[in-house]
Length: 197
Image (tube, rainbow, N blue to C red; front, side, top):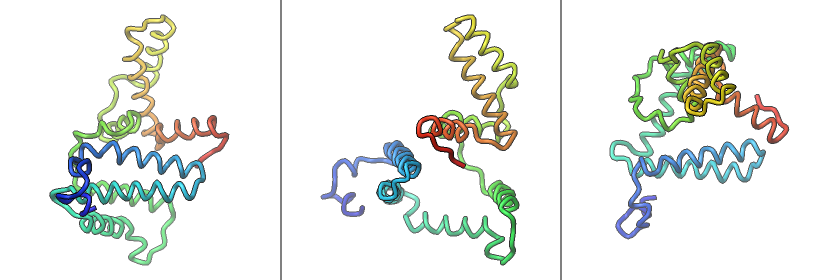
């Protein structure tokens, strides 16, 4: 990577910024997921390499951290969030998950201004976790959408559909579900005839 980014390296690579690369990081992550779901081990290995390349690329052009910092941060986080492993205690998977969420909540908050990179249902869930919830409950939002839909009111369809989707995402979070993942599994079931857990 250093060779690609030096003065005699690749002009395209040298022009990149963390922001210009974000779409590639997301694309490569989705492609890795696609290979995983397809059961394509060789493809998954290749796509995980592409994800790793993005991590290396971002680390190389970052001004305030290096690849060593990235790895050290993850090692520290894994140790901090797995006290049951490093203390020799034996916990259930449920207890581990609850402890993970408690420990994660202790991490310093991050700037939230770039959440728009998330798929919209995942973003809605994240907002709801922080207490930013839709103005109407799910029954009201879905009823309003259905009225607009049945009344063929195209001018209000987008707004009421978005309100209903956000309300559904909020309800799913309240019941410890992930609507993005639930919809993804359902689509995969119909597309591939498979089920995923």
